[in-house]
Image (cartoon, rainbow, N blue to C red):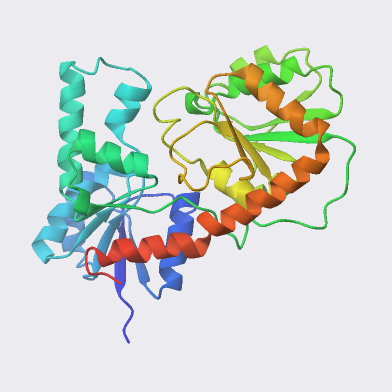
Length: 353
Protein backbone atom coordinates (compact mmCIF):
# COMPACT_ATOMS: atom_id res chain seq x y z
CA UNK A 1 0.00 0.00 0.00
CA UNK A 2 1.41 3.39 -1.02
CA UNK A 3 1.88 5.80 1.90
CA UNK A 4 -0.28 8.90 1.79
CA UNK A 5 1.66 12.14 1.42
CA UNK A 6 1.34 15.23 3.60
CA UNK A 7 2.85 18.49 2.37
CA UNK A 8 4.05 20.38 5.48
CA UNK A 9 3.63 23.97 4.28
CA UNK A 10 5.42 26.90 5.91
CA UNK A 11 8.66 27.98 7.52
CA UNK A 12 7.83 26.35 10.84
CA UNK A 13 10.09 25.09 13.59
CA UNK A 14 9.71 21.34 13.16
CA UNK A 15 11.51 20.85 16.50
CA UNK A 16 8.85 22.77 18.45
CA UNK A 17 7.20 20.23 20.75
CA UNK A 18 3.74 20.42 19.13
CA UNK A 19 5.14 19.97 15.63
CA UNK A 20 7.66 17.33 16.66
CA UNK A 21 5.09 15.09 18.33
CA UNK A 22 2.47 15.35 15.56
CA UNK A 23 5.06 14.67 12.87
CA UNK A 24 6.24 11.63 14.83
CA UNK A 25 2.68 10.33 15.15
CA UNK A 26 1.99 10.94 11.45
CA UNK A 27 5.09 8.96 10.52
CA UNK A 28 4.01 6.18 12.91
CA UNK A 29 0.69 6.12 11.02
CA UNK A 30 2.65 5.53 7.79
CA UNK A 31 2.23 8.99 6.31
CA UNK A 32 5.04 10.46 4.26
CA UNK A 33 5.85 14.08 5.18
CA UNK A 34 7.23 16.41 2.53
CA UNK A 35 8.53 19.77 3.79
CA UNK A 36 7.89 22.92 1.78
CA UNK A 37 9.43 26.18 3.02
CA UNK A 38 8.27 29.05 0.77
CA UNK A 39 10.77 31.88 0.43
CA UNK A 40 7.86 34.36 0.71
CA UNK A 41 4.75 33.18 2.53
CA UNK A 42 2.27 35.23 0.52
CA UNK A 43 3.71 33.90 -2.75
CA UNK A 44 4.03 30.30 -1.64
CA UNK A 45 1.43 29.07 -4.14
CA UNK A 46 3.39 30.58 -7.03
CA UNK A 47 6.63 29.02 -5.82
CA UNK A 48 4.87 25.66 -5.48
CA UNK A 49 3.71 25.89 -9.10
CA UNK A 50 7.10 26.98 -10.39
CA UNK A 51 8.86 24.20 -8.52
CA UNK A 52 6.24 21.69 -9.60
CA UNK A 53 5.80 20.54 -5.99
CA UNK A 54 4.52 16.98 -5.76
CA UNK A 55 0.77 16.81 -5.24
CA UNK A 56 0.07 15.31 -1.80
CA UNK A 57 -3.06 13.86 -0.26
CA UNK A 58 -3.17 16.69 2.30
CA UNK A 59 -1.56 20.08 2.92
CA UNK A 60 -0.76 20.82 6.57
CA UNK A 61 -0.07 24.38 7.77
CA UNK A 62 1.44 24.01 11.27
CA UNK A 63 1.12 26.17 14.39
CA UNK A 64 1.88 29.90 14.39
CA UNK A 65 1.93 30.04 10.55
CA UNK A 66 -1.12 32.20 9.87
CA UNK A 67 0.83 33.96 7.13
CA UNK A 68 1.02 30.75 5.07
CA UNK A 69 -2.67 29.83 5.15
CA UNK A 70 -3.92 31.95 2.25
CA UNK A 71 -1.25 30.94 -0.26
CA UNK A 72 -1.60 27.29 0.75
CA UNK A 73 -5.36 27.51 0.26
CA UNK A 74 -4.98 28.95 -3.25
CA UNK A 75 -2.71 26.08 -4.25
CA UNK A 76 -4.97 23.49 -2.57
CA UNK A 77 -8.10 24.80 -4.27
CA UNK A 78 -6.40 24.76 -7.68
CA UNK A 79 -5.29 21.16 -7.16
CA UNK A 80 -8.39 19.91 -5.31
CA UNK A 81 -6.38 18.97 -2.20
CA UNK A 82 -7.73 19.32 1.37
CA UNK A 83 -6.11 21.87 3.67
CA UNK A 84 -5.58 21.30 7.39
CA UNK A 85 -4.40 24.11 9.68
CA UNK A 86 -3.11 23.73 13.23
CA UNK A 87 -2.95 27.37 14.43
CA UNK A 88 -2.59 26.61 18.17
CA UNK A 89 -3.30 30.29 18.85
CA UNK A 90 -5.75 32.93 17.71
CA UNK A 91 -4.15 36.26 16.87
CA UNK A 92 -7.41 38.05 17.67
CA UNK A 93 -7.72 36.29 21.02
CA UNK A 94 -4.12 37.06 21.92
CA UNK A 95 -4.25 40.75 21.05
CA UNK A 96 -7.80 41.54 22.17
CA UNK A 97 -8.86 39.16 24.94
CA UNK A 98 -5.45 38.35 26.40
CA UNK A 99 -3.30 41.46 25.94
CA UNK A 100 -6.16 44.01 25.64
CA UNK A 101 -4.22 45.78 22.89
CA UNK A 102 -7.44 47.16 21.42
CA UNK A 103 -10.98 47.52 22.71
CA UNK A 104 -13.07 44.53 21.69
CA UNK A 105 -15.51 46.74 19.79
CA UNK A 106 -12.85 48.88 18.12
CA UNK A 107 -12.37 49.03 14.35
CA UNK A 108 -8.96 47.35 14.68
CA UNK A 109 -10.46 44.51 16.71
CA UNK A 110 -13.25 43.99 14.18
CA UNK A 111 -10.79 44.02 11.27
CA UNK A 112 -8.43 41.59 12.98
CA UNK A 113 -11.27 39.18 13.78
CA UNK A 114 -12.57 39.36 10.21
CA UNK A 115 -9.06 38.74 8.81
CA UNK A 116 -8.48 35.71 11.02
CA UNK A 117 -11.99 34.35 10.50
CA UNK A 118 -11.46 34.55 6.73
CA UNK A 119 -8.12 32.74 7.02
CA UNK A 120 -9.64 29.92 9.06
CA UNK A 121 -12.51 29.61 6.56
CA UNK A 122 -10.03 28.55 3.89
CA UNK A 123 -9.26 25.32 5.76
CA UNK A 124 -11.11 22.03 5.41
CA UNK A 125 -10.10 21.13 8.96
CA UNK A 126 -8.94 23.31 11.88
CA UNK A 127 -7.21 21.63 14.81
CA UNK A 128 -7.52 22.96 18.36
CA UNK A 129 -5.50 21.82 21.36
CA UNK A 130 -8.40 21.98 23.85
CA UNK A 131 -12.20 22.01 23.79
CA UNK A 132 -12.11 25.59 25.05
CA UNK A 133 -10.05 26.70 22.05
CA UNK A 134 -12.33 24.74 19.76
CA UNK A 135 -15.32 26.62 21.16
CA UNK A 136 -13.44 29.92 20.86
CA UNK A 137 -12.74 29.27 17.16
CA UNK A 138 -16.40 28.38 16.69
CA UNK A 139 -17.90 31.27 18.66
CA UNK A 140 -15.63 34.18 17.72
CA UNK A 141 -14.10 33.14 14.40
CA UNK A 142 -17.21 31.45 12.99
CA UNK A 143 -15.53 28.16 12.16
CA UNK A 144 -18.26 25.51 11.60
CA UNK A 145 -18.16 22.78 14.24
CA UNK A 146 -17.85 20.04 11.62
CA UNK A 147 -14.56 21.62 10.47
CA UNK A 148 -13.10 21.60 13.99
CA UNK A 149 -11.32 18.86 15.91
CA UNK A 150 -9.35 18.60 19.17
CA UNK A 151 -5.89 17.06 19.30
CA UNK A 152 -4.08 17.50 22.62
CA UNK A 153 -0.52 18.85 22.71
CA UNK A 154 0.63 15.80 24.66
CA UNK A 155 4.27 14.83 25.13
CA UNK A 156 6.77 12.63 23.36
CA UNK A 157 7.05 9.73 25.79
CA UNK A 158 10.13 8.38 24.06
CA UNK A 159 11.83 11.40 25.64
CA UNK A 160 9.61 12.45 28.55
CA UNK A 161 9.41 9.53 30.96
CA UNK A 162 10.32 8.85 34.61
CA UNK A 163 13.98 8.39 35.51
CA UNK A 164 14.42 5.85 38.28
CA UNK A 165 18.20 6.35 38.56
CA UNK A 166 18.09 9.76 40.23
CA UNK A 167 20.26 10.64 43.24
CA UNK A 168 18.27 11.37 46.40
CA UNK A 169 18.64 14.89 47.82
CA UNK A 170 17.76 16.54 51.13
CA UNK A 171 15.56 19.30 49.71
CA UNK A 172 12.49 19.74 47.50
CA UNK A 173 13.07 21.46 44.16
CA UNK A 174 10.22 23.38 42.54
CA UNK A 175 10.89 23.90 38.82
CA UNK A 176 9.45 26.46 36.44
CA UNK A 177 10.70 26.49 32.87
CA UNK A 178 9.52 28.58 29.98
CA UNK A 179 9.76 31.79 28.00
CA UNK A 180 8.70 34.16 30.82
CA UNK A 181 5.67 35.58 29.00
CA UNK A 182 2.70 37.16 30.74
CA UNK A 183 0.59 34.01 30.44
CA UNK A 184 3.07 32.13 32.64
CA UNK A 185 2.77 34.45 35.63
CA UNK A 186 6.46 34.00 36.46
CA UNK A 187 6.32 36.96 38.83
CA UNK A 188 3.63 35.12 40.84
CA UNK A 189 6.05 32.21 41.22
CA UNK A 190 8.85 34.44 42.49
CA UNK A 191 6.51 36.15 44.95
CA UNK A 192 5.43 32.72 46.23
CA UNK A 193 9.07 31.69 46.66
CA UNK A 194 9.71 34.84 48.70
CA UNK A 195 6.86 33.88 51.02
CA UNK A 196 8.70 30.60 51.72
CA UNK A 197 12.16 32.16 51.94
CA UNK A 198 12.66 30.80 55.48
CA UNK A 199 12.09 27.20 54.38
CA UNK A 200 15.58 25.96 53.57
CA UNK A 201 14.28 22.59 52.39
CA UNK A 202 12.54 24.16 49.36
CA UNK A 203 14.51 25.48 46.37
CA UNK A 204 12.75 27.29 43.53
CA UNK A 205 14.35 27.16 40.10
CA UNK A 206 13.39 29.55 37.29
CA UNK A 207 14.72 28.17 34.01
CA UNK A 208 14.65 30.07 30.73
CA UNK A 209 14.44 33.63 29.47
CA UNK A 210 11.91 36.06 28.08
CA UNK A 211 10.06 39.37 28.56
CA UNK A 212 9.40 38.97 32.31
CA UNK A 213 12.85 37.58 33.17
CA UNK A 214 14.43 40.87 34.25
CA UNK A 215 11.45 41.78 36.40
CA UNK A 216 11.64 38.39 38.11
CA UNK A 217 15.34 38.91 38.84
CA UNK A 218 14.50 42.22 40.51
CA UNK A 219 11.72 40.71 42.64
CA UNK A 220 13.99 37.83 43.67
CA UNK A 221 16.94 40.00 44.66
CA UNK A 222 18.31 38.97 48.05
CA UNK A 223 16.16 35.84 48.31
CA UNK A 224 18.40 32.81 48.70
CA UNK A 225 15.89 30.05 47.94
CA UNK A 226 15.39 31.18 44.30
CA UNK A 227 17.85 30.25 41.57
CA UNK A 228 17.83 31.17 37.89
CA UNK A 229 19.12 28.91 35.13
CA UNK A 230 19.70 29.58 31.45
CA UNK A 231 17.58 27.98 28.76
CA UNK A 232 18.47 24.43 27.82
CA UNK A 233 17.86 22.34 24.71
CA UNK A 234 14.66 20.37 24.19
CA UNK A 235 16.75 17.20 24.29
CA UNK A 236 18.08 18.06 27.78
CA UNK A 237 14.69 19.04 29.17
CA UNK A 238 13.45 15.57 30.25
CA UNK A 239 16.52 15.05 32.44
CA UNK A 240 16.06 18.47 34.06
CA UNK A 241 12.38 17.79 34.76
CA UNK A 242 13.26 14.47 36.36
CA UNK A 243 15.79 16.16 38.65
CA UNK A 244 13.02 18.33 40.14
CA UNK A 245 10.26 17.27 42.54
CA UNK A 246 7.41 19.63 41.61
CA UNK A 247 6.73 21.16 38.19
CA UNK A 248 4.95 24.49 37.85
CA UNK A 249 2.47 25.28 35.09
CA UNK A 250 0.99 28.72 34.38
CA UNK A 251 -0.50 31.26 36.77
CA UNK A 252 -1.60 34.25 34.66
CA UNK A 253 -5.20 35.46 34.84
CA UNK A 254 -5.83 35.92 31.11
CA UNK A 255 -8.45 34.07 29.06
CA UNK A 256 -5.62 32.34 27.18
CA UNK A 257 -4.11 31.06 30.44
CA UNK A 258 -7.48 29.58 31.38
CA UNK A 259 -7.89 27.92 27.97
CA UNK A 260 -4.71 25.86 27.65
CA UNK A 261 -3.07 22.78 29.01
CA UNK A 262 0.58 23.91 28.76
CA UNK A 263 3.42 21.84 27.31
CA UNK A 264 5.06 21.79 30.72
CA UNK A 265 2.02 20.15 32.31
CA UNK A 266 1.99 17.31 29.77
CA UNK A 267 5.77 16.90 29.95
CA UNK A 268 5.90 16.98 33.74
CA UNK A 269 3.08 14.44 34.09
CA UNK A 270 4.76 12.16 31.52
CA UNK A 271 7.88 12.23 33.73
CA UNK A 272 5.81 11.33 36.78
CA UNK A 273 5.96 14.69 38.55
CA UNK A 274 3.29 16.45 40.59
CA UNK A 275 2.10 19.62 38.85
CA UNK A 276 0.85 22.87 40.37
CA UNK A 277 -0.91 25.19 37.95
CA UNK A 278 -3.82 27.61 37.77
CA UNK A 279 -7.42 26.46 37.60
CA UNK A 280 -8.62 25.77 34.07
CA UNK A 281 -11.63 24.21 32.39
CA UNK A 282 -9.38 22.95 29.59
CA UNK A 283 -8.81 19.63 31.35
CA UNK A 284 -11.29 16.78 30.75
CA UNK A 285 -14.03 16.88 33.39
CA UNK A 286 -13.35 13.27 34.39
CA UNK A 287 -9.65 14.04 34.86
CA UNK A 288 -9.87 16.48 37.75
CA UNK A 289 -9.88 14.94 41.21
CA UNK A 290 -7.94 15.21 44.45
CA UNK A 291 -5.69 12.40 43.24
CA UNK A 292 -5.04 13.55 39.66
CA UNK A 293 -1.42 14.55 40.27
CA UNK A 294 -2.30 18.09 39.12
CA UNK A 295 -3.02 20.62 41.85
CA UNK A 296 -5.02 23.61 40.62
CA UNK A 297 -5.04 26.95 42.42
CA UNK A 298 -6.66 30.32 41.65
CA UNK A 299 -4.85 32.43 39.03
CA UNK A 300 -2.56 35.29 40.00
CA UNK A 301 -2.36 34.04 43.60
CA UNK A 302 1.14 33.80 45.07
CA UNK A 303 -0.22 32.97 48.55
CA UNK A 304 -2.14 29.95 47.25
CA UNK A 305 0.95 28.79 45.36
CA UNK A 306 3.19 29.09 48.41
CA UNK A 307 0.68 27.15 50.52
CA UNK A 308 0.42 24.39 47.91
CA UNK A 309 4.20 24.01 47.73
CA UNK A 310 4.59 24.07 51.53
CA UNK A 311 1.91 21.41 51.93
CA UNK A 312 3.73 19.09 49.51
CA UNK A 313 7.15 19.80 51.03
CA UNK A 314 5.79 19.00 54.49
CA UNK A 315 4.30 15.70 53.33
CA UNK A 316 6.78 13.96 51.04
CA UNK A 317 4.85 10.69 51.28
CA UNK A 318 1.82 12.36 49.72
CA UNK A 319 4.07 14.08 47.17
CA UNK A 320 5.42 10.71 46.04
CA UNK A 321 1.89 9.28 45.72
CA UNK A 322 0.72 12.38 43.86
CA UNK A 323 3.58 12.04 41.38
CA UNK A 324 2.64 8.43 40.70
CA UNK A 325 -0.94 9.61 40.11
CA UNK A 326 0.31 12.23 37.65
CA UNK A 327 1.98 9.57 35.50
CA UNK A 328 -0.97 7.21 35.78
CA UNK A 329 -3.42 9.94 34.69
CA UNK A 330 -1.15 11.09 31.88
CA UNK A 331 -1.22 7.54 30.52
CA UNK A 332 -4.99 7.43 30.86
CA UNK A 333 -5.92 10.81 29.38
CA UNK A 334 -2.99 12.23 27.40
CA UNK A 335 -0.79 9.37 26.21
CA UNK A 336 0.70 9.25 22.72
CA UNK A 337 -1.87 6.56 21.87
CA UNK A 338 -4.69 8.86 22.97
CA UNK A 339 -3.31 11.79 20.95
CA UNK A 340 -2.75 9.48 17.98
CA UNK A 341 -6.38 8.32 18.15
CA UNK A 342 -7.52 11.95 18.26
CA UNK A 343 -5.40 12.60 15.19
CA UNK A 344 -6.82 9.60 13.30
CA UNK A 345 -10.38 10.65 14.17
CA UNK A 346 -9.64 14.19 12.98
CA UNK A 347 -8.16 13.10 9.66
CA UNK A 348 -11.14 10.88 8.98
CA UNK A 349 -13.32 13.99 8.97
CA UNK A 350 -11.65 14.95 5.71
CA UNK A 351 -11.34 11.35 4.47
CA UNK A 352 -7.61 11.14 5.20
CA UNK A 353 -6.57 8.12 7.23
